[in-house]
Length: 171
Image (cartoon, rainbow, N blue to C red; front, top):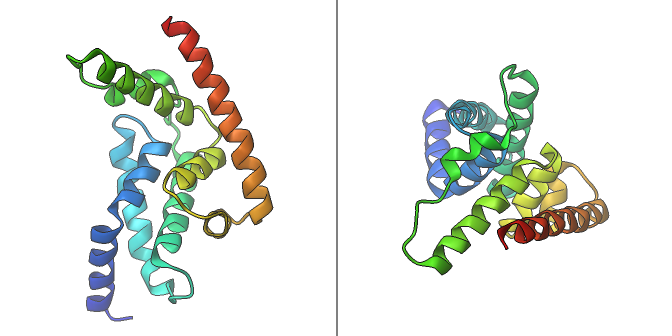
């Protein structure tokens, strides 16, 4: 593949699918680590372009590349911290409207709960929230479609239980 073609495809992917990259980065890193992971994910996407053969949809391929880069980053990053305290950057701005404030608080709690999941589970719920089909999720993560369904149901139940526990704390 020529350099100009690689540049064009990278520009297209980052323009058209930037949400994918940011979802993965936000799911796997917090605080200043997000910038480091973003660089790693973008570098992995750049390096993977020559291997892309249009056999998969660009979104599925990019999810897989980003997901694998994030998992590799977690394994090699010695100072990676998974504590909830690092989610200070996710804290919603104070809202005048009480209902909006409660919604923002619930969203922050959901991000916190998702961040506490195992990396594979985080990826799975992230893909689900982005509306990917079980087939696409299975391609991205290398699981069977039935395994995706089972794991996703368990993750949703776990998140529901976690969020219900947070509701009790709010009262």
